[in-house]
Each structure stands twice: as C-alpha cells, then as structure tokens.
Image (cartoon, rainbow, N blue to C red; front, side):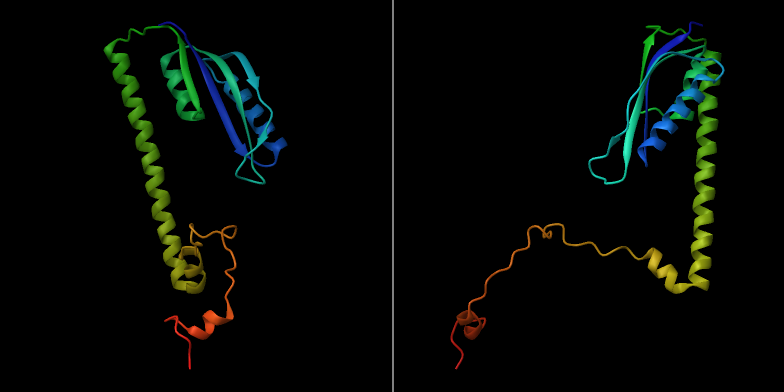
Length: 179
C-alpha cells in the first residue's frame, strides 16, 4: 500500500498564552515521534486571545504529514482529534476487503471502549451525586440547581430609566385623577 500524505490542523485552547504555545509544540513533537508518522512540514502560529473571553488563548499548527499506512492515519485522527484534515495523496486507495474489514473492526472496538468509559464515568458521577445528596444536601442543591439567568431580551445596556411624572402617579392605573 502507498504512503498517505495529508494536511492536518491541530488546534489548542487554554490559558495562559505561553502555556498554550508550549502545549501545541509538545503535541506536534509527540505526533512526530509516532511510529509510522513523518512530519514533512510544520507551521506553528502564535497564540491569539479569544474574542469572547478575557483569559483564554487559541493557537494552531498546520502540518503536512506522511503516514506509512491507512491504519496509522486513522489512529492519529482518533488520538489527536485534529480540527481539520485533508488527504493530499494518493488520489485513490485500493484496499483488500480483509484489510478494510480489519480497519472497520478496530474503529468499532475503539468506539466501544469510548462508550464504556463514558458509561462508567456517568455511573460514577451519579454515585457521587447520590452520596452528596445524602451527606451534604445543601451543597447538592447548590451544585445541581441551574443558575438564575437574566432575561436575555433585557440586558443591562438596554435598561433605561423611564421618567415618571407626578401627575401619572396621582391618576393611578385608570388614568383618572384620584379624589
């Protein structure tokens, strides 16, 4: 089977900026050390502040990578979860059915493992919440009560003081003067 060349974008979000930059660099180096993976070209970008946040930064790396096998390509997709990937070559892949079946079964196995981890985590979370409800009900209520959200239509910027005329107060709701 031919080697696979792909362009991949890895993205990181976090704080502070120097930590985000260092983490991306470590991730790219770790990827380059994977057996069956060769980074042909890389471009790491400087962290930028996230518009909606005062503390978070984001950065990304554009990588051109060569994979020894399709299996290694798919393993990297699952392990590194890139923001974007594009296979550059080969243009077409011819796979024996046995190889294709093997890949499909490995993907299914990984998905089952993720599913088991998720279910176990949800179960453990429920046990912790039950214990918290039993031994610290006030803390349980505090953690599980949804926050009070301000009316999204009326924001602080939109609130305006409406001048009230003394005559309107004297008239009351009906608009007629009180006797």
